[in-house]
Length: 365
Image (cartoon, rainbow, N blue to C red; front, side, top):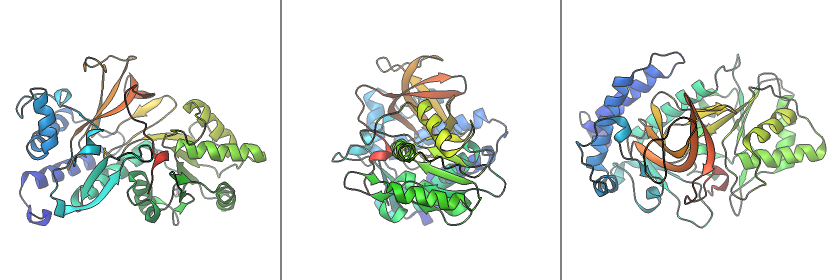
């Protein structure tokens, strides 16, 4: 049944309620709403249990029924690997208008996350609200967006490129600029042209937001170091680094990479922001060298890889994210990443030993 005819069904009601929740909790300083969030999470789990076949089978394999889950931490998390082998979706195929692919190793089956018009709108509301929280404070007058990724037309199945494109259309001062291009094994960055564009745009004096993966940032910093050039981006400029190496460059520890970026681009201590997201989720975490934070409509659980039990602060655990904005697929996803929690933030430690390589730097169009 087409979505436009589902005016009063549970799916439409959930979409509307989650959309309203995100709108209310998006502003910095908005009051927390624990009971409302948890009630929405349980409703969403039960709907997806009934309507996402692979998720119901996964839950039943652990003896978990629709009424078994009494609190949000008990919601079973589906591993991202399931998105490679199955359509993890409650959407009728006729309603699907977009699909985002994961950025796994070239030649492997990617994860697939389907969206309808309505779930894509919710995804975009989530990413915009999360971005404004994660990048606060924004400079007066806004940023000019400059992306090291290819343009959307060259990478139509990349959630990262869709995210940058959407945010650029909504928030960039002037048209967003895309410097990357598709390559044989992923994304390429014409370095000389990228440096020339950054020099030209810097001369205009508008604060820039430079967005890209870790491997692209390493290549750019190496080129600047080789030429002895310090760009000195306009005051108020920032960098948003999205992670991901996987053989595309030398691997640089995050703190070291951020220090290189600040030095070569003339940025202050708060000039580099890390974004953590993936195609299987609809919300993203943001932060600096001290840690990442999810928006109020998504929550984190870290579990012991062997026992599945939650670990305490300072202990390494597998990342499970419970994301209200994942209305059309599954609310809880186990990412295969390891992290440790420090109060309200978490620090990524790398991939679990059995997890497949990931990273938007490997995305193929």
